[in-house]
Image (cartoon, rainbow, N blue to C red; front, side, top):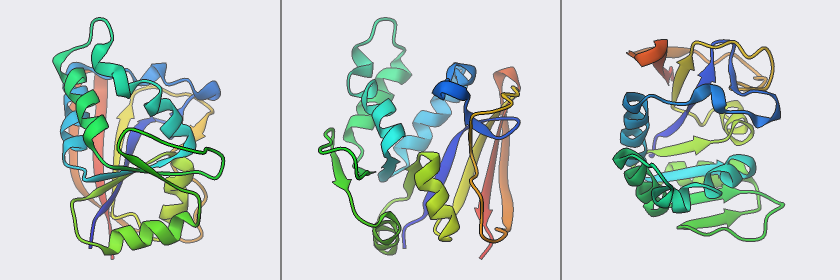
Length: 187
């Protein structure tokens, strides 16, 4: 069975995006960007909701060709293009860049993918991840907590039907007071 990991940058008060989908507060240091690159290299399949897919696919296919990119950003762009992706949406018609589109039941497809063999899967996008959390499919949470209070925006966690008990497996600090906290779902 494959492991399903939900990880994102998050504000101290629990938001992944400020109002208007503003992500400028989460600009990573070089060390944190390298951590994200290493994490993405360990993922064999990424599951995207429509909104985050649109954000990522508008930049990373050519991210290595942008002015002033670092070697890590070049590698991230290459890895992003090479990693297989599944995009869940009922409103877009086609996807590219080593991706396939699923328009049907997301939870059914995620459970099917999880039941197979392979490297860990990453799930990206709070709406899609929230549905997977409620279905009990997420095995690990990776919160990269930035020392900022946003007051409003898109929350990392959506409403749950029941408690989910977690075990802390790692913490790490990065420049600027950014904290990584990794938790595994207690089964």
